[in-house]
Image (cartoon, rainbow, N blue to C red):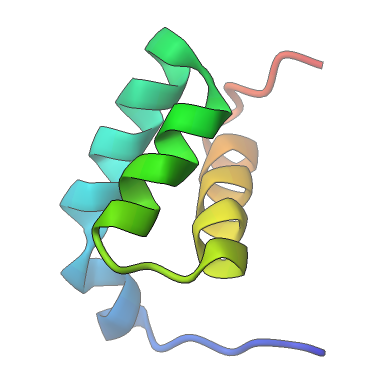
Length: 62
């Protein structure tokens, strides 16, 4: 199932995503996803945000 998001929807929580990225870099993806869940994001959307922003910023350590 494909999901489509409006740019404005992503911009609303951009500070949440920035904070989640910071948490991920310090403690790992589990805590970053947990942070986004606590902010009301759905699990699949939280994971997708973290993966897509990691890929876009090139901070993926593979």
